[in-house]
Image (cartoon, rainbow, N blue to C red; front, side, top):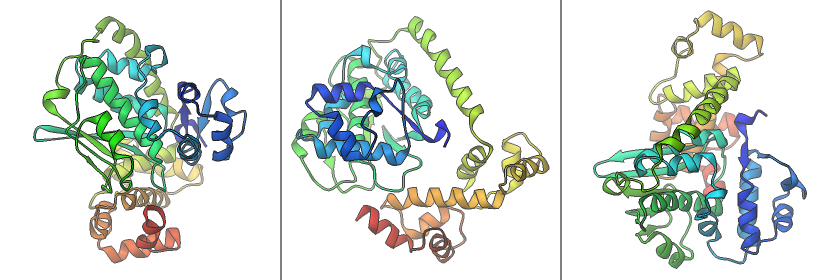
Length: 333
């Protein structure tokens, strides 16, 4: 497994947890991870291990909604380069765009921004997940974003609303931290801000320091894209083209600045074929969409390029051995 498929765990997270009284050996044991994992200078986890780690924190900790406390760390020395670049941005909106651009450097995840009317929705997505994200991880990421906005603007801004997939629990902690309506049992984990708030200037804006940090992040991003395996590059393009159609080899080759024959030859040299990669991309996206319970089966089939829901159901049963409904119930239930 390449580093493109793994997450780098920030060691500031276990530092903060220990300050909050959480036993890291207990967390690692609960997660089924090596007891000396955090002794390494750099810690890499795949999606399953990352989810196990954050699920274990919720089980071991005696503090309710502890993810809000971890994510709202304000000590600058514990900020990652991505967080610092965001903080030195001109506005909260620009900070969100930087976070969305660079977050892929930390692992196979995306931060999706959707502007509509006078609002902007922000959703964190874990690209290789085949089950629902742990509550602690979601809380940490959401509160981290809100904290950057509040620190940059210099006052306690409030989102318009917060939507969480989980059932109702500890509502008072979310009401207090976010100061906005909170909807549980939602279709996604997302936080929505007013465009008026996110366009406010950051008091922390610092062009000189930003020009020191941003070039290295851009270089890291370029290196990450270059280091991606051929099959991962093909699947990434296929996923962009999927909605309403089945991508063709010629379209993907054009995007990669290759001839169809060259792409086919390179795939064969690696023991892969284009049809198989399209199927893998569809399967990975199917898992993601099925966890978004607001999507109807017909909508999911369309987004995956199937002609009708029955074709999708047959394909999914071939991939997973169960129907889409059974697979989703076992994980979202």
